[in-house]
Image (cartoon, rainbow, N blue to C red; front, side, top):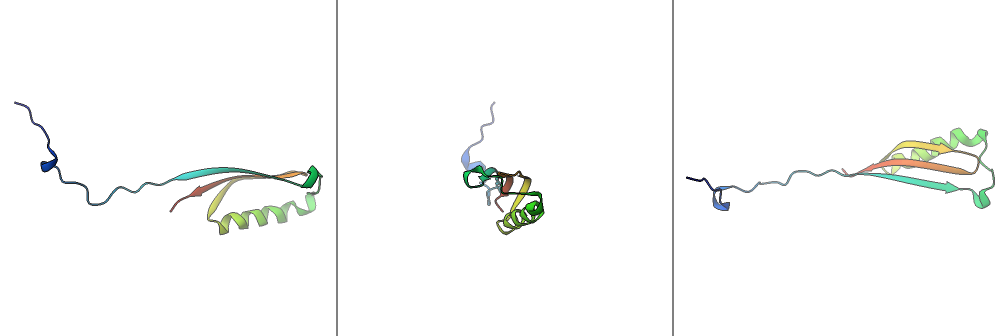
Amino acid sequence: MYNFVTYDSVTPPVNMPQSLTSVYVHLVFSTKYREPLIGDEVKDELYAYLGGICKNLECYPVKIGVIMTMCIFYVLSRKK
């Protein structure tokens, strides 16, 4: 009449499927006393420096913003 599946008739999987994680991180750094110390002359160097940090940490910058008083990161970190 009815077909029931029992644990004896089902073979368990040999390997578990791979699970991947993605973590988005939002970081904000400000200058001391929020003084406007980050000028246009250092922004390009600062972008390169912050991008290098992300590369060394194996994370991917989604958005990096720099204004006179703060740096804002939005990065993606993935587990391999």
